[in-house]
Length: 179
Image (cartoon, rainbow, N blue to C red; front, side, top):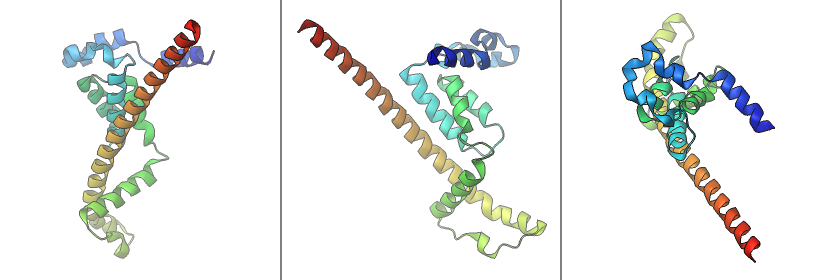
């Protein structure tokens, strides 16, 4: 019952693959847009989609979903999962996650925090932006790479665990039926 409900929701919100393949503005993607991995759930496409989505979740741009979609098409990963995982960073989670990214960038660059002598004013904001943007972008890149790698390895491990579990259940069922 729950499976059918989830399928209905997915079909309601996910665009039709054929409509996307025929869309005039997407024809520049060529044959990559016709890859079945963009729409199917298999180990390779899901692992890659998780990695792509988590990487672009750390991209500090309003076009994260477009970048994730382009990455999914380029690497032939599941398009829906790549785009959906970008929402790990959303308007509620962005401030703490991006502040953490800034702190990670500071730590990796070995720079002290310039916020200690910061004076809140328009001039202070503009002059402080140069001190903040470098560590922030470095932190975003580092965390994007780390989360992407962790997501890929984690999803691959989970997938392998599930497959091994199913095989063990089948083997147990066969031995109990024959014995």
